[in-house]
Image 1 (cartoon, rainbow, N blue to C red):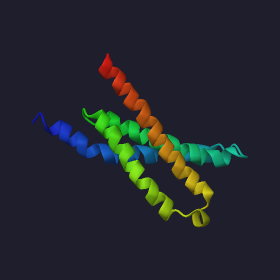
Image 2: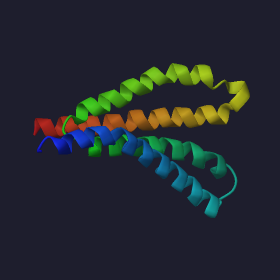
Image 3: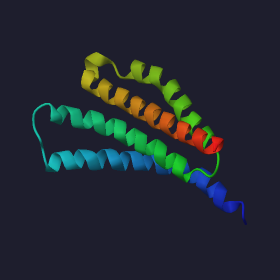
Image 4: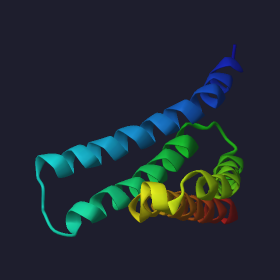
Length: 128
């Protein structure tokens, strides 16, 4: 029965991290719709919300995953690296606009940035 808890955490961490990313993205967008600031900020908020929600997804995934945090971080980075060409192929600039591509780029930067931060944090904990 001791093995059930880590198994459940491994099964739940991907849907929970994706849900955390979606909730954080839409809550930031909702806040910007409630209190519009106008100007270029209205264009910047969806882009920054994409990056912050991706970082939140990685952080929640690492927080939920049992013990192999480095493997989870590397998994997120590898999946992101594999999905970048698919994003470029299936999101043409002329159809969706450059704004949509900037949101995808912000997501990738959010994932890479949070992964780098958490990986370095894990390295420092192991060295101490």
